[in-house]
Amino acid sequence: MNKDAKIFVAGHRGLVGSAIWKNLKAKGYLNLIGKTHKELDLLDGAAVKAFFDAEQPEYVFLAAAHVGGIMANNTYRADFIYNNLQIQQNVIGESFRHNVKKLLFLGSTCIYPRDAHQPIAESELLTAPLEYTNEPYAIAKIAGLKMCESFNLQYGTNYIAVMPTNLYGPNDNFHLERSHVLPAMIRKVYLAHCLKNNDWEAVRNDLNKRPVEGVDGTAEEKCIANILLKYGISGSTVELWGTGKPLREFLWSEEMADACTFIMEHVNFDDLKGTDKEVRNCHINIGTGKEITIKELSSLIAKTVGYAGEIKFNSDKPDGTMRKLTDPSKLHGLGWHHKVEVEEGVARLFEWYLQE
View 1 (cartoon, rainbow, N blue to C red):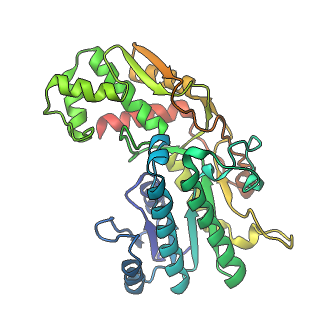
View 2 (cartoon, rainbow, N blue to C red; view 1 turned 45 degrees about the horizontal axis):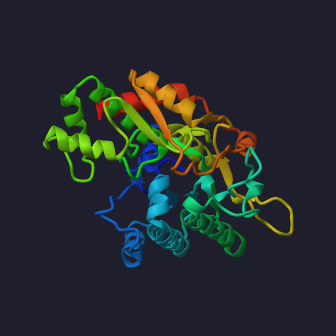
View 3 (cartoon, rainbow, N blue to C red; view 1 turned 30 degrees about the vertical axis):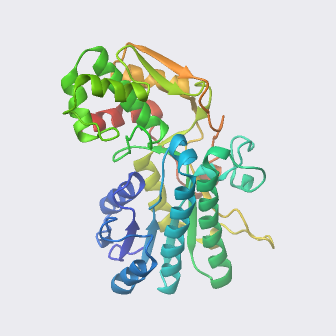
């Protein structure tokens, strides 16, 4: 990519897109295009076409997606498959019709089978059933990956699909119902810490920034306590879903962004497709190759926050996939490695949360 190339970052305000935007700017790419959801609804095919007609981007990072944690994935199943298919269909389709030179599609490691061999290599795709709780989202992301692969094979385009592991970092979503596990745990532990210390000013400030089911910091103490208790937060305990036994891999979002820029600068589809007659599994895992149990993670977060209360696990709630460790050897072979470990990342994210 030339430094003056016009680059569209779809989803530039989210966790993934904002990190990519920041990384591109730091590397001297200044001709960036980003649109908020209000400015451009990626579910609206006519609006996406009009945007591409007007802007004519040369490169596209497709980081926009309808995302959430295990509760949201299992509850809003139709939204997760429909919205993501629509976004992908519109952006990839218009990229092809407008001769975009290169596109990077961001998926998720939830595309892999529930009982995939560990660590999970790219070749595990479509070898067994998916995890039920996030199956609709996973199918949408598999469709996006295959769309990129199929356009490349039929039309000679250069669309690369990457599958990042669990991400966390600046601009993360801390919604108690819809966020991913790590930011949700940070917020839960922090609020429990505040309640334990009877720091109602901090609790009210938190809810004013991020209301819970419409309850903000202006509500009565009893009302606030009741809504937080619904999510397992009290002055004495924090309740988390599952057994705490699942293992998870976490990657700092800004490092994911660096890997994405690296791939757009140095990797092409021809480097990935191999020589087999049947071309498949050309996507790239982005991960650390390291994992931690949810219970260990909760202890790390409690230590970082300074929380001295009890953490309980509700085994009546689902664990989700028990293990989902990526094999990032393909990415390592291409020349990129992570640097930020989870201990440093949790401390960084908690500091960001307090500042924001």
